[in-house]
Image 1 (cartoon, rainbow, N blue to C red):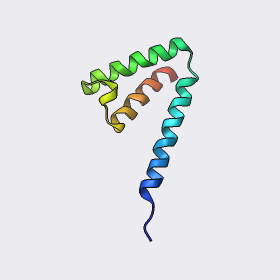
Image 2: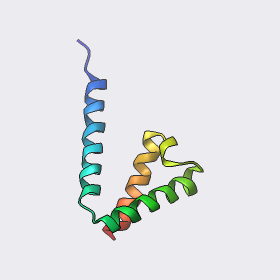
Image 3: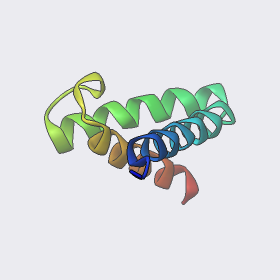
Image 4: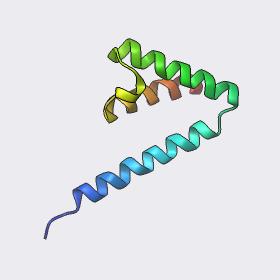
Length: 72
């Protein structure tokens, strides 16, 4: 019997994405606007591209950096 790695991996990615959306939703409108600007800036500075062109791993890193800014 094969272990369902793809299904488990997909569920984990979906859960992490849901957590990111919940975190973002709990920010004020001003903080959301700042988070959007910071995310776009990190994408440009770190990867020389826009947010919509990042890989999932790159996007995760940008999210961690933006979230870290608000946690400080």
